[in-house]
Image (cartoon, rainbow, N blue to C red; front, side):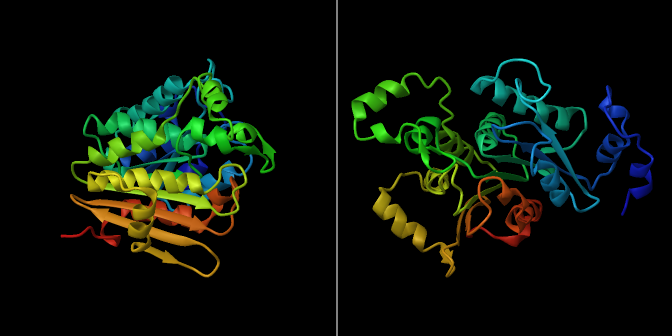
Length: 303
């Protein structure tokens, strides 16, 4: 391991000044360092459940580093979580990585899982409007927007939340008025794609057996992102036919769809058979998505 001795000499535990940590110095001083900034889901904190194992999986190379944060109101972070607040926290993390750690955006992958995908798209949109482009954007078990998700969401896969009243549209619209945080990731992704000036690697990954957020939510994200490359939105039937021509399917029901466009845009959707809502973070598809983001020559857009 490239920096094994330096990392072994680092004292374990909390650092009031993270810049004094050996791991930070390695990140800052190594011109070949790559950084994954990870935004977790709505449950728990940065060290919850499978997250630490996922961190180890993603950094199983001496050149890859990972930064994970707890949003306001999560873990030991103070404050109250709101949509704007969480996106602001994500922006602050990325700004710190670029300004303090000195990592240029083309050596950064921003990644989110579940709620973290909505944070990621908000962060990506903010920086896209400033002309900042990342090595990759990876959304795992994402959702289109909060109102759509709640309309069909079932807790633990079988306890309906609002789906019983979908047959009463006026009542559903009335209840939607009380959803304060909209999390319109579809619109944000479309903005990211349409404002890309040089290069974009966008990957959507979802498990077919996800009982928390149905995989059709990633279909919606893919449709909006892909439509932004065409300058028009096709109806569901026409888009389905168009997408099928860009899709490779397997016998187990999984598939990979890839859309390429100018100037250098690659949008990739992967549906995997197993992994559920959280275990998918440990899948090889996630690790490979990171590798593809940092290796621009793997898929070429049309001339």
